[in-house]
Image 1 (cartoon, helix red, strand yellow):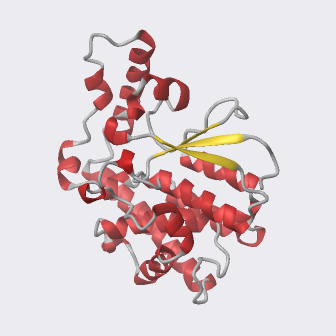
Image 2 (spheres, helix red, strand yellow):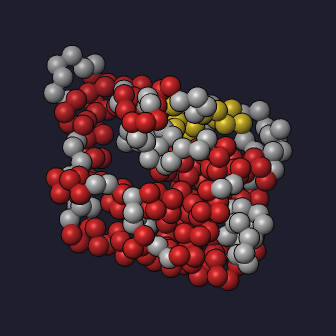
Image 3 (tube, rainbow, N blue to C red):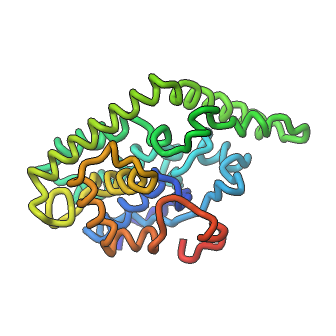
Length: 269
């Protein structure tokens, strides 16, 4: 039982890479110590139905229209970045970032968040033509309420700032270089700390496991083994066989495909 009565809501899509990182961190934290685990409810934001473009989501949850986000009456404003949510969780549950490994974990996390994985995981057509600015398309509607229109304008600007340069040859190379730096440090840490155990630092997982596993699993699914080492892949396969991972994914891959059915019908989520 958590040490406080505050309730938090994780706005979540089960095939969002960064949503999965936070969800996995929550599961790991609760397994490490149920007493310090915050009371977090999961709320589906169905990206397939564009719920992230709704007036409510853009104005009350995340003006960038992204998942995950964490809301609560205990917050002055929502936490709208997965790294910020993870830092908050580590404050609640210091078990996730043990002092003896703090420096290494911080370095791994900083390297992981130095790039955005979408550049590595989207298809060749999207890389060639770019990701359509859906917010700009929705702004063509004539019957939008004024608050919704303003919110979509903000989302449209964010989209262009985020995506206009990342799919250029130099942008792609920069992301690949940063990803390799992260994988190299993860490989080195596993070599020094893992000792044949399941988690990066041995028998107990940390916030770094929650993020690294999801990132590497997605890269493996999209056949980007050129960025990975065999040691990192072996470690990830071990975590993917864990009860903690099954609690998050229920045996599903990190990417949606039609055989899974509609996301709204997934049970459990």
